[in-house]
Image 1 (cartoon, rainbow, N blue to C red):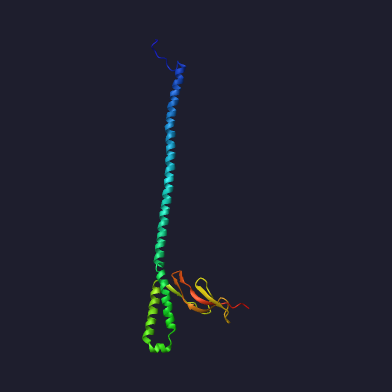
Image 2 (cartoon, one colour; image 1 turned 45 degrees about the horizontal axis):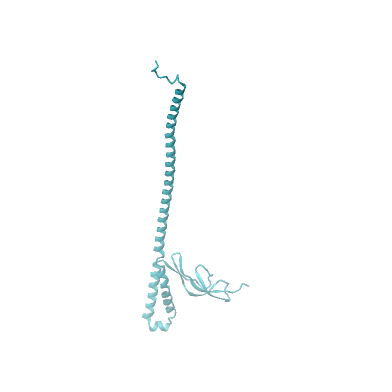
Length: 192
């Protein structure tokens, strides 16, 4: 009977070894679970970071699209502002030429006067077709610093301070953008 192995119930050392084996197996089972939980936490964190980066990239792309659309609209609306601004002296010169026409000139060269009138009318039509509007203040209106430029001030009887006393050149707007303010003289009559 010497060959018989003692059972774990008979040997207290073997009982401790058996309980250690069971404990090691439990820890081994818990280690993979905690390792998997840690890996899941890491993956969830990476997923959340990637989702955040994707949302930011989509927002940036949308902002870029909106900015490009606004730039395209602005270019379409205001792209001709430089040439329109360069054509304003032509309008001024034609207007001055017609203002200098007397009855004698009209009788002596009616074709020339009519040609200047037609040229001015065509220029005005082309400018308005492209969104250029005239700012034509009247004598007696109040000065508006957003659309008028005061070229001089003078005390004039029968005018209140800030009223327009003379219009030297019309102003122009391109859609809602000021191309050139109207050049005016303004009354500086002191209040009584």
